Image (cartoon, rainbow, N blue to C red):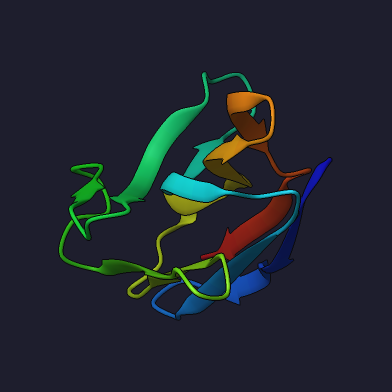
Amino acid sequence: QVQLVESGGGLVQAGGSLRLSCAASGNIFSITYMGWYRQAPGKQRELVAGIFSGGITRYADSVKGRSTISSDNARNTVDLRMNSLKPEDTAVYYCNVFIYGPQGGNNYWGQGTQVTVSS
């Protein structure tokens, strides 16, 4: 069993900053990818930022330059820091992790955390 626990989010004013954290625990052999996705009402879930085990990162164009994703491989955690927040950043943010365990590789999602940016 693998559990993902997300923290952070909430109500933020436009122009402000936030930090989202996600911790994976359970029967984990290795993690190859950790990322954050978001889904706004009426829209599809989309990538915000991701980081591979070797340190390669990728960002959505909409957050590039004002977001930083980082991971701690020893603690199995991933953080997303976002600055200069905009109302269009309002969404439910989901942690996504690809984990190798006793039964092979599987993709896991967190329960989601709401981020609301007020104008």
